[in-house]
Image 1 (cartoon, rainbow, N blue to C red):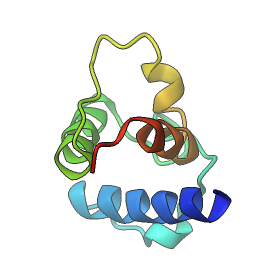
Image 2: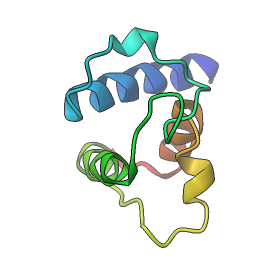
Image 3: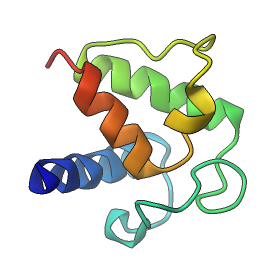
Image 4: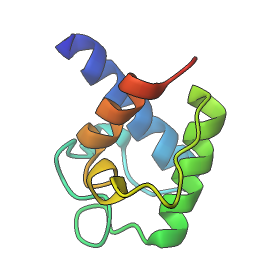
Length: 89
């Protein structure tokens, strides 16, 4: 399972850098670094964009009223874990 998680983390890093036009190599993103604020330095608009990209790619919606959003978006690894548990594609 760790290989599958790492593959999803790599895929998400690519999706995020391309979708948000970030000027960073996806392989340089630390899977455990914060996505919001420090770390990648994303803001709420970026998070909304990521949620839309994930919905299109993985076939489920990340809801803005989910009380777990702080944890889900706390790092690439947490996001990948959440997607692995809920994806339909």
